[in-house]
Length: 375
Image 1: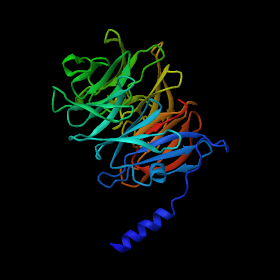
Image 2: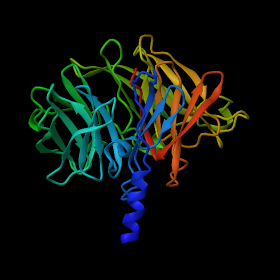
Image 3: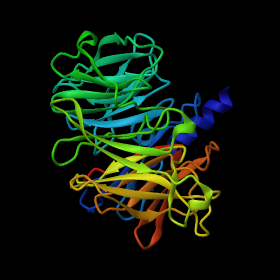
């Protein structure tokens, strides 16, 4: 035991000082990557990638001299701070976005597995949870849990959420889109949009709000055999109604499939929106160069939110698993490659239309989410 402690102390002594994020040297952050880490190993990490390409693998540990925790699920900016949901640690870590110093944390006193966070008011937020509950937290000092709310339709849980129009919209897995009022978030006042059903494949997709304040939600048929198309649902947040549905059909009859036809969806569906909030990005599978659907190519398409037309943006040949995706303010597609879930440090790969892969950065174990400070 003494030898182990000595090794740990030596390792701590060798931890380099963190460079300035916005210092006189002009260094700027290009992106922050949330790495889940291997379950039960306390290896969750935040990686920082600078505009000049320098990458810091585990910035939270370097700054705070302790690990981030077990399974980093998501990170959300609220009140100018990063709120990180650390799933298996039952904790919300609150960070300064420049120094990455911990300014506080919220440890669950009851059972729970925090997933995603959405603001309710200027001092409260919702946290979705694997345990069929919603947890209300205080987002200003003193940081703490306020309430544990049991959802009515168990065992299903709410996953990804978006705050829009004074409401929180949450993907109630397999049930519909849950709607809560920010000023009265009680379960008894919850409404359910049963015509917008988010399933396992799309439960962690971003639900973006466009430049006109409309909410967009990607859905697939619940049964695999019925997945002949995907739907991008445009929702008016005031009326809580779907006002447009953009259906993207899949070609499935082998004799009719031609090179470039959309033939399905990959295992992990990802969605993002551009900085101007008028183009939504989503991934599909297209028939390969020989017209075969047996070895499809993962491809990013865009949807124009005003005229509701879709077009191919770029192909990602050789990419089998996109565990996470983010679109930079410049329109680069940055994907999280977790190396087929093999418990080793993964990469963020950067693609530009017409140029293919232009950069890659080694980050942490199971990278799953990318944040762009300038977006």
